[in-house]
Length: 199
Image: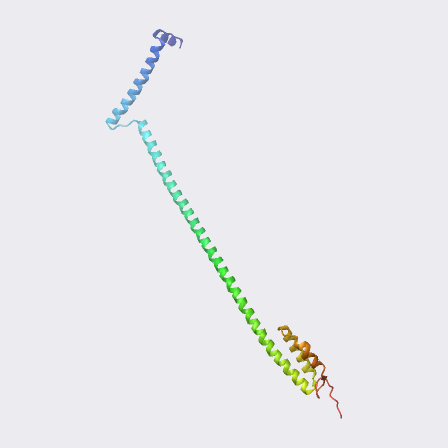
């Protein structure tokens, strides 16, 4: 090694460096020329064959990656599209349910008003019928001058229904007091009177 350094110093460092670069350039030129000569004759070195095979494998792998990316993108787009479609359908269903609920509320309100009106009409009819019946019973009782226990019980029950239906106070103020003032008579053979056996 010391001899080599001594020889380089004899030649000169500048010259040695230039020679070194010239040798490298010569090697590169020879290798390049060798490859060109092989290429001109359609021949290939093992290294170039390996490089081509590696390049082909890299190219195939890149194609597979591109194909996989394309499929992944299509799947992702399909999922996003379906999510948007389902979201839109969900919004439509929710809106239809809301509209249906609003319509149902209106229908229920209308039905309630109709029922209230019907009940009010029915109450008015019931009141009119009961008032007429109470006056008729009152008249019959006062003409005959007495009332039976069954008649009084029926009269009072009709009066309760009359009041519950919304009838006015004519029942308490006039009809009931006048009927209750009448004598209560138990008809012969009534369950209220014991039957006297004369035998």
